[in-house]
Image 1 (spheres, each protein chain N blue to C red):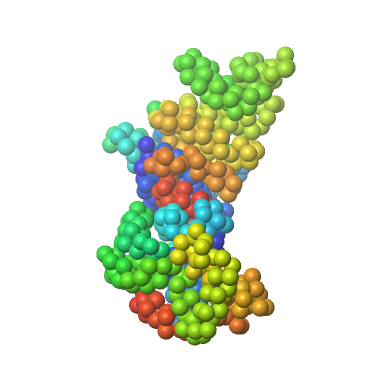
Image 2: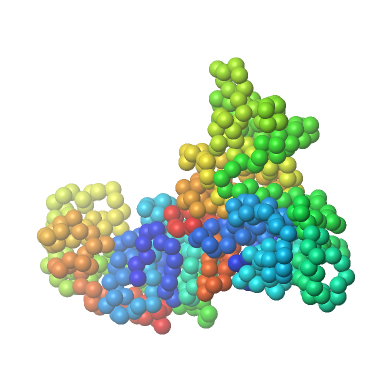
Length: 352
Length: 224
């Protein structure tokens, strides 16, 4: 479990420390105060493919993930510059997620400026000078030696060698969507084979009694999770039944598939009916504990946060609220322990 | 000065936590008269969602700790808790010490004592040192000190209503008397209360009464 995080020069973070992280970490704070960037920082630690993860994150942000072969230094740096604090590619990004036992991860990202023409930097570009930048990531797990990655850019996009996909899974869910159907189907199948599906399937069917059961079926787009509804013969794709149910099941699949890992959920409230909020928390917490998983969840929704109280009470040690603010251009996170978090919710105080 | 029932931040240096809204409004009136401006006043409330009164103070203090951890009380460096003694001032003090320490605040070693250097902490038990009772004892004593005839009037009214035999304890009976007094005197706003009298022109309780001297002096000491 990640216990503390240090982020330097990544996106809006110049230098930020936060400690006291627990199994369930709820991130609150104003727009632009770094909540999503915090999730992204943790996602960058998922493995030595940090720079490829950066492009996945750009998809979440809907800021474009196309890579064009750069023609000069400026356009090369422009590919990466919004990853750096103050859009300054000369800075060194450091993300240090320190945790229990084998759970520490660290990534450094920087531009290396060569003084000698040692290798081809841009496969499609003949314009190689002696002072071209090269983006570098150094990923380190616990105290093992760092894995250094220098990605190439070619006509097909980003080519990353020397990549290790970590055994410490980190999954990130964007705000509006369930995971793609094929990811859900893959996780469904995996959990089914391992005999771990029944618990979350039962939880979903108990919460939505009109759903009798779930199965993996093939449709025109490939495998997908289908639902058998009461009083209906034909099974329907879960996403057709309900966006909210599909999203919840997608989250539960992600959590159950991330045993001993981390799941990042941005704006969890989207798609859920307010009367479901309490049971939503109860189910998510139960599956999280069953899988020794760690959650980082952002939310702006007061009703959703208020609905968390019954789940926190009696389990205060498993919860932390991380409240972010931006003061004089600097983002800080404040950790509020679960028992005080619950008390502020009970008093109806403003916690968003 | 007075925090909303649902507040977001505590911006003053000092916080005074009362049992309920009436106590908080009284303290606010005292602070205003004394020109003490560095205190916020708060109290648990039904609007806050977790009841009110002395039993709600522990959760209220926990929520204050939450606000501090959230970074929304940047200047806070002292807490004064003002509960009612009722009939058990010693137990009340012990309960408040537990409430403070449970929320990781320092607690004073004795009541009516402002302690601590970097973070001041104190417990003032209403109505005052060596006494049992509540806020209403202070209000009643201040009112009849200014106008002794009121005691005879209200006692007679109270007896006439048959309340001498009422099952309510002495503290409740005194609250009834104070309510009767306020309702009978504030003719422009007969539904006024201990919380609202400080805005009434014909308020029967003089805020500058010597009855409030001990509390006044204590507030000065706490705020200094």
